Image (cartoon, rainbow, N blue to C red; front, side):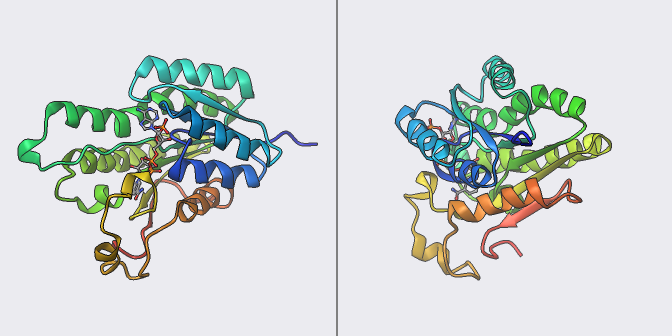
Length: 242
Ligand code: NAP
């Protein structure tokens, strides 16, 4: 029997990351998931993944910490032997008008959403270059494409991920490593539960919020079928950005 492909998904105890892990597991991937502190959610996700008959392990560390990321990647490579797909998904918001935004809230969002992608991708690409194959997916946002009042920190981080994606895809294409970004719209997760859905839906051509599974299916498509796609930002937003 051919050995399973391996995916590493950050921030996959809940929400979009969890849905991505489940979708890839359904396609036969072994999955390493990471999370910040919610042990209960992570354990539940691992139970759901192992029920799909794949190898699944959870790793708790802060993606905004460079050493924690490189140590975790080392451990994951020892545990799984290789890595075919990396999804840089972990993220947070610390919203507020820019006039009152603290440096602490700026740095927390930039480090968790953007620097984390550098910290995780840097050790992972060494392995992918040796394998001469790989797929990296960065979770951007509509906020990174069109900006959003009250989210200067988050929009900057998510726009940064788009530049990172495009540059890296040009550097790594000749090594058969594809790098793409997904820009979700409003997806129903803990991150968006305080928002006024009715008001948002007025502006969405498809007239509904997105589900984590809408993003997960796109991740699976990029990993499995999008073999000639690199350097792209795929909007999965119900038509919000057209
Ligand atoms: P979520 O439900 O809040 O889940 C966040 C995940 O990230 C959790 O697994 C959490 O772990 C982990 N995480 C948070 N901070 C971390 C840290 N410092 N170190 C390690 N892990 C950390 O978020 P979501 O809505 O699924 O969003 C996932 C990604 O999609 C984010 O990058 C977000 O910006 C992006 N996005 C979301 C939307 C949306 O509408 N939901 C739209 C556009 C883009 P714990 O469970 O341990 O806390």
